[in-house]
Image (cartoon, rainbow, N blue to C red; front, top):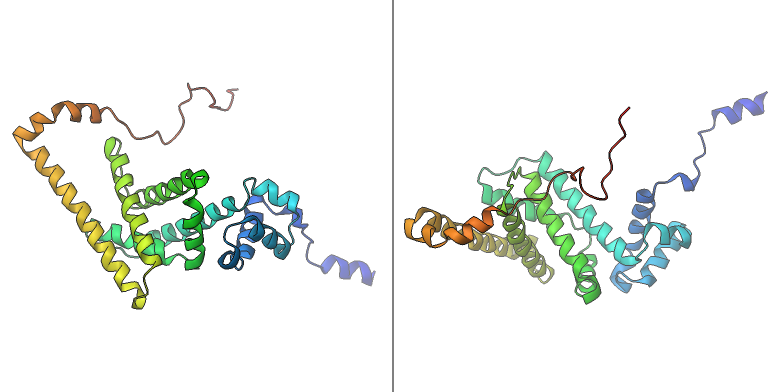
Length: 247
């Protein structure tokens, strides 16, 4: 009787296999970060992380089918999530250009290990992974604009993200070599890049307000007006989509 009572008071045992793929990837990522400065985002790091986290390599291949590059992308996504959380909880400046600067700053401050970013930059510079790097940067820009309430539905949806992608990537590269106190040189560099973008926006506004220039660019503008932002949800009449059957 005493034995059965003692057993009933024990907390329920949870098998490690009950962890979701995302949880397992998080465990691997946490274990990998101590190896990345020495071995980069490599197969060596992946195997060391698996050993440290106690994850079988078969499971590692299941959650990271492309190897360490999947962990590198997971690390980038983790930083994006931390940035969005700060954007949603902290008070932002009134001026929109300052909100953009603050968002980029939040994203860089979300980095827990500069060397991990440096190694990631090297990885995504390889031709085979360049697409992953571009997608990661674009994703960061998209999450910033979305968090700040962007409602663009035309070509501006693309130009905003393309421009911010350039600002963000240039700032990160500058930051990697910055040894100034509290990254002050990086924040000054960021402000200059945003000022450059604002000059472009000012020039675009002048074109729109000029009767001569607006007439000259009427043809190109008509084409650009036909470009629409991607749909937030897939169309139900396109191949590959699925919807619940009606009763």
